[in-house]
Length: 168
Image (cartoon, rainbow, N blue to C red; front, side, top):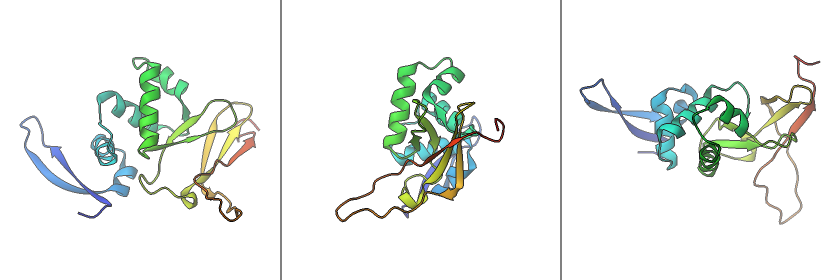
């Protein structure tokens, strides 16, 4: 089995007949179905509990990065500490990444390519100073920065601020 493939079991109705299916991890990230979220978590080493799956699916369906307060407000039955621990686990296992957009509230979004992070994969974000919404600009790459000898880049947080198309 290659490192970009994982094996998952798919239950075929209540009779619990199981069959093996190979899924490419990058295809899995793009598809967004329930089994995919569970498979991605297992592959990342995160136990896919019902609450973790709920939070992950909510982030998958979001049209823009969300704060923990956004998640807490939408998922009323999940307490703040569980959301915080879950987001930390997802970040630690490269399932999501965080964005500091300057608003004082860190935002979170699903990684487009789980387990394949590099600075060249990162994209620019836009934060609207009027409505407070943060947008992904996935087709706008973070500019390359030449660092002095001995410096090692581990991440980039590139945020453009201004007025979004709805507020301008």
